[in-house]
Image (cartoon, rainbow, N blue to C red; front, side, top):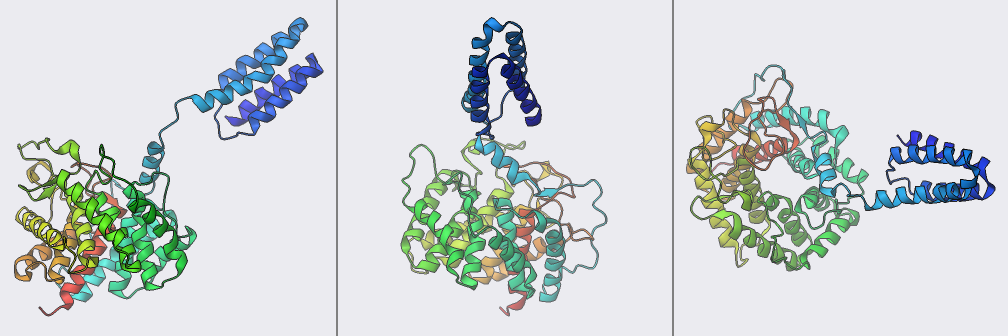
Length: 453
């Protein structure tokens, strides 16, 4: 398209060069101005019309001056039009980027894996983690990016290396972080999704504290904690955000020992909780749009992955928050309430459906939500927050259920594509954030298997 526009612009300029030297000067100046701003899209049809007008002007030489003025102003008009025309929202571009290369749903994913054992043994758990991580790494590493979708995968890959002892998963994240200069996305500040990558950066920093690994993430967290609340809109207005930003603030606190990061996280968490947490159902609504919505069976609409994100966020709070922090007991209480509710509605196959309170409406289980729920409950047992006798059967069933959706090549299926509410999908659907959740769950299941009590 740009070459065609250039052709008509050159043609118009040539026509005017025959008309008058002055016109040529005008046209050259205007064309140079137009070319200096190559990012603006010009309307081709305008070029064509003005080119034709220029030819008419050439034939009627008494209009030479008018043609010259046209040559001068037409590109300027194009630039102005390009600058004043309604721009595509930045969020639309971000939405496209976050969906690029994030997963797939082939019609024929091949056979389901055989030989994976659901036994609560470290070797069996590690074998399943490696199979899934190896496949995902082979597919996704060439297209790694800094979106929240991949950030969840990086958290899982780092955990996989720590659990299995194989450094290649962590190293893949490390190499990408180095190529990314340890920077976060920042065009939509203070959007929590764009901060999610910070968890991986700071985990890698804590393993090897090089200043470059911390600098940009800390700078953005410093801007965040002084941001005044908007009385008309929550900072974390959707429950997924509780997995995206709080873990970064918590790690920044752990590294710097500056309570401002912890206090800010605590303040914002309870604002979101007050809006989205149901004290009756002990689950989070995805966002305020769903507060009054019902499932087909009349039950409130609670999304499995959204509640999985919250369970993952709570793991981070409970891991990094000091035991004597004033509001810690509130987090423990919320965590226990959610775990009890989720255990009570677990399906017979050990997993959770996309719509938590209307499981019969969804044929397939949803693995990403199930994985993060398993991660949270298994962590709770390991941290002695949840009773092992009560909850160990829950996570054992969930782990076995997830393994039944691993394919022979390592693909992890039955993962809902990017969405904000319950939905339907193919059995083969595999997306990077779900694999991240699976690997995090596996890391906690490994710890369970290795513990004696």
